[in-house]
Image 1 (cartoon, rainbow, N blue to C red):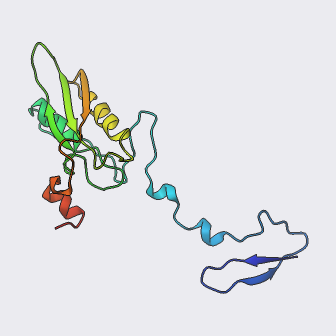
Image 2 (image 1 turned 135 degrees about the vertical axis):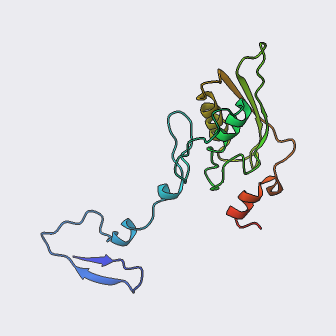
Image 3 (image 1 turned 120 degrees about the horizontal axis):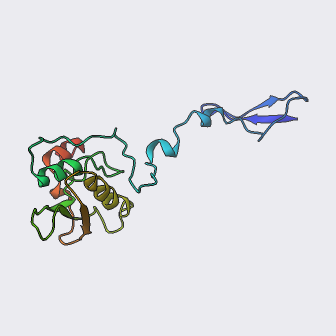
Amino acid sequence: MSLLKLDLNAEPVEEAQAPDQESSSGLNTGALSTAPKYSDYVPSMHSNMTMTSPLPPKEPVYDPDASLEEKVVAVLKTCYDPEIPVDIYQLGLIYNVIAPRSPDEPDKVKIIMTLTSPNCPAAQTLPAEAKYKIERLEEVEDAEVEITFDPTWTPDMMSEEAKLVLNLV
């Protein structure tokens, strides 16, 4: 019996197989086993509905005396779109951060944000990640994330820093 040996850089060559040697699939997949895998590039889901970023996790950086709104913005800068190596704040997806400190709504934060498109694959995970991370602030009792498409997001809404990262300037 002979096997067809696959070599991506050469013509197919038949290779003899010893009779006592068993073949699992009949193909030499050595070149394919070292190729990058889909999972090397596509983020994976955590049980808490957060998306793993292609970048290392970041802790929010803020002054201890910062206002609640400033702390929320720092937290939002740790949430990354899984397909773009830029945080959601610099991408211009955050339209408004409402962090009133009043007796009516103690420590409730509301975020009004958008997505890059209505068909965004991260439509479930980005808002959930933002809410989860904001609620981890000790000053926050509850967070609400409202999605809007008015106005529609455009690349012009990105910060200059984000445009530089994405080579758009």
